[in-house]
Image (cartoon, rainbow, N blue to C red; front, side, top):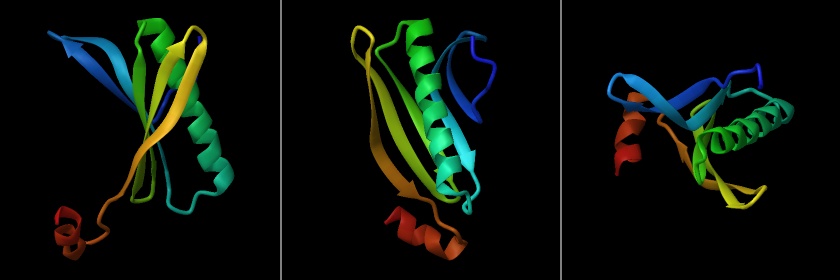
Length: 105
């Protein structure tokens, strides 16, 4: 088993019990260098693969937050022992109340 934990985890709940994890996230400050971002991306890929294997899932969502930018990924079991990790979308959250209107429109 892996001893490290992700910064964020989204779990499915059945009744009052956590059933299984369906998404993982990593977060970094806006001034993080490319190496730090890359390490987090690899961590997301590993956490997602382990989740698919342990919970016998077809896919898992992952997200990476760097400052106000969020990138969403999907990790999918394509065939036996073959996984695809692909970027789904990127969004930038408003930095000020005045920017919220632009974000919603």
